[in-house]
Amino acid sequence: MSERGQRALTLLDQIETPVLDGMIALAKANAERQGYFARTILFAYVSIPFSIGALVAQLAPLATQQALLAYAPSWGGALAGVGTAVVVRLILDGQARQFLAILEMARIERGAPA
Image (cartoon, rainbow, N blue to C red; front, side, top):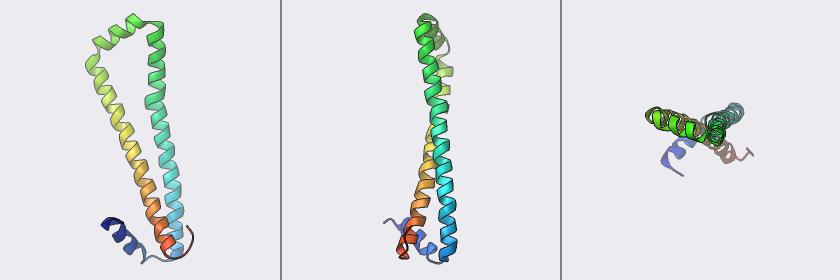
């Protein structure tokens, strides 16, 4: 285990079991919420726009090509912004799950099931 993980477990040893159980319940709720937000962002920022773009490109390929070329810098900035939002949301989801895992490991080390 990493030094940070070991330090976290040392700090969690000082917390009473009922309090740790409450923290685990809150961390589970937070991890579910973060996962829901991550899936929503992926769907709203990636799936829907690309589906609409593909539909428009099929219906009017020349107009789509002209729009893409005319507004290339704007499209690049928009894609960078969307990509950043998706990556940040996935990082937050991962952090929530990692925090939950540390809490559950502390609970298991106490000899009780998580």
